[in-house]
Image (cartoon, rainbow, N blue to C red):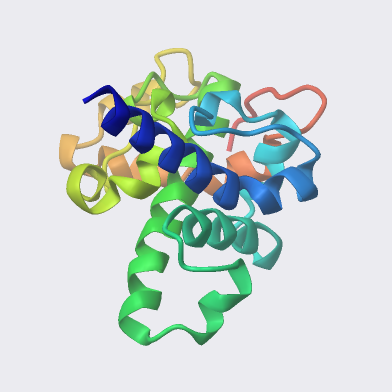
Length: 182
């Protein structure tokens, strides 16, 4: 039994090494199978939350590497079904990265995905995380728009938090890091 667990751990470490290989080169930081959103540096997070080609390729590299599907550029040559599955995970990770930026700014409260290893967010997406992919963390009571948030119908609060994404893209990484009134 111990050998089986050791083999699983080695396989997980290898998958993490493949997934984070491009990140290590690109961001000059160390990542492993236990790296969580909260472990990422501000500079890395600032690049990844942009939602452009510069941020998408590292996410493709991570997902394809962890899943053993090859290198990031392979994404563009995948069959549409495979590509859609990778895109679902990519969009989920992008949301989680943006929520992590909001957490660091003090805009949102804790959320379960903040403490999960990135490996788990990728490997367990369809079984564990796809059901919560549209959930957002609650807005922090210290945010200037908190009263407006509480007055919003509960079913629309996720949309309220998501509408803050353009503002977090503008504010995150700035020297003051403060919350500006919209």
